[in-house]
Image (cartoon, rainbow, N blue to C red; front, top):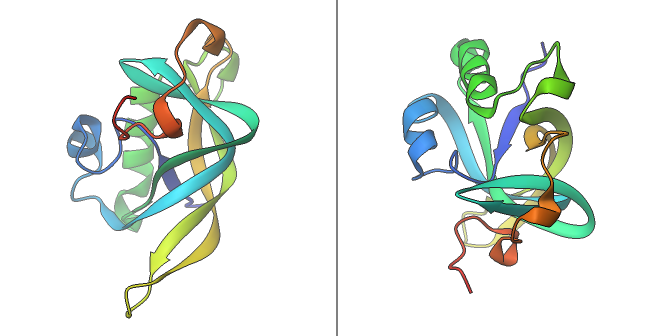
Length: 143
C-alpha cells in the first residue's frame, strides 16, 4: 500500500481530541494545507463534501513510516470506513490532491501539491440537512 499523508480537517487536526488519541507522537510532519473542491458541513463534527469552487482548510499529516498501517487502520475505524464495503461506510477514504503551505527560513510560505488520503462524507450523509461550517474551516470561530 502506498503511504500517502493524510489531510485532516476536523477532530484529527493538531490540538483536537482525536489528534491527541490517534496521531500525537505518530507523525513526522504536520503542515497547514487546503483541499480544493470540497466544502464542510456538520454539527458536532464535520463532513467534507465535494463542491466545485469550495476549499477546505486543514492540515497535511505525515504518519511515521513504521506505524503507518496501524495508524491508518485506527483512522479507518474512527471514521467508520470499510475498504471492502465503501457503500456501507460513514466516511469514504479517497486519495486527492491537496496544497500544503510550507514555511521558508525567512518567514514566508510556498505551496506544494501532495497526494493525500482524505475522509469524505459517505453515501448516507445528506449535507443539505446540516449547516455549512464557517469558512470551511473547522477551527474558524463560528460567525
